Image 1 (spheres, rainbow, N blue to C red):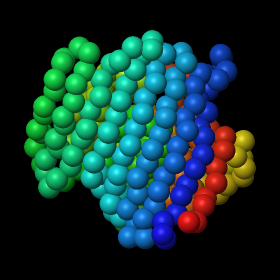
Image 2 (image 1 turned 180 degrees about the vertical axis):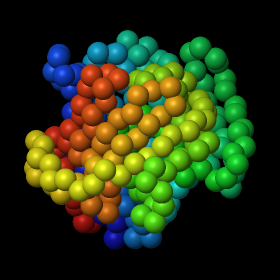
Image 3 (image 1 turned 45 degrees about the vertical axis):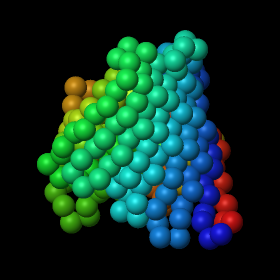
Length: 226
């Protein structure tokens, strides 16, 4: 087998209260450039447990995704998403809504999906167009929740965001020292956040979000060639 495997751990930290969660991730990168993420996200402060399995093609466009949510050790929802042409489909079941079946048409094919795994927040950097404007709009894009902690649904919601590239910065975190690209992203209804990624895999190294008085850092990282 010729795939690569990226594996690591992200830490969630509040500026006043210290560690508030963690995210273990494994990304399998196929020879054609497509990749599948498997993430386990734990948020101690909100008592949220999220499991995400998400696949994108070589151009980072979403193909399919499975998300399961629990909060306070109780089931919240479990949904499967499929992306085809300009349509997003969702089949799921939630404690609040019961059986869910959605079909949402978009103006253009989706270029990203908001899974609320921190790792895929970093994948926004893959959308940056070097020859584009200084601030680039990512319009009418689907996500699994509009909540800041992503603890609703999971169901299809659609929103806009903007992306700005700040520049290159050397950054030291627990996992090591990396040359990173610094970006700023602004979501509708939320203050802007900053994030730093490295390399062609746009691996998230650090994120800062004043809205939650929080930051997130890469604690462990390895690349394995099978």
